Amino acid sequence: MKKFLLTFGLASLVFGASAQENAKPVGGSGPMISLDKEVHDYGTIEQGANGTCEFTVTNTGDQPLILTNCKGSCGCTVPKCDTEPIKPGAKTTITVKYDTKRPGAINKSVTISSNATNEPEKIVRIKGHVNAAPTTPTSPVKEASPMAPVEKN
Image (cartoon, rainbow, N blue to C red):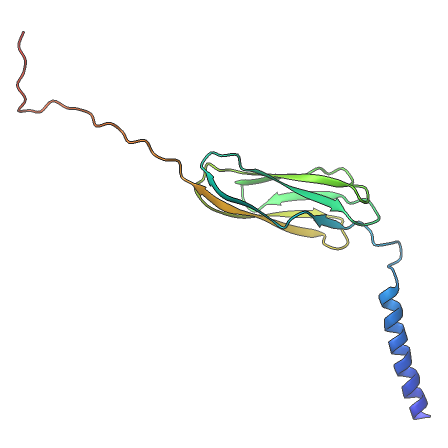
């Protein structure tokens, strides 16, 4: 009897696990977010250059995806996202503007909040380097030397 119960219990576990793997969640997969890239690399750009980049968001789920918020990690990184529902299979674009007036390394993130069942908060990054604008040398001001002869009229 013990062998029967043990065999029956193990068989139930195996078949139950197999059935769960193949079962879809009730109501479908819901809205799901997918992006064309995780990181945008500006490379090396000049100070004052165009610091705009784009991330393409696709709804790979079976219900409308809603982007509720897009937030940059600091004031120098400003994302803009559309909050209109994205139909299954449809795409939208998130535009990120980085302030290139600041020379030095770029290593910032943007947090995308949504109703996605796979990743309700998705973080993408921007990176690169802003070269400082070249400085123009100032011409020296010629001052009269105290020993210079004074011209008389």
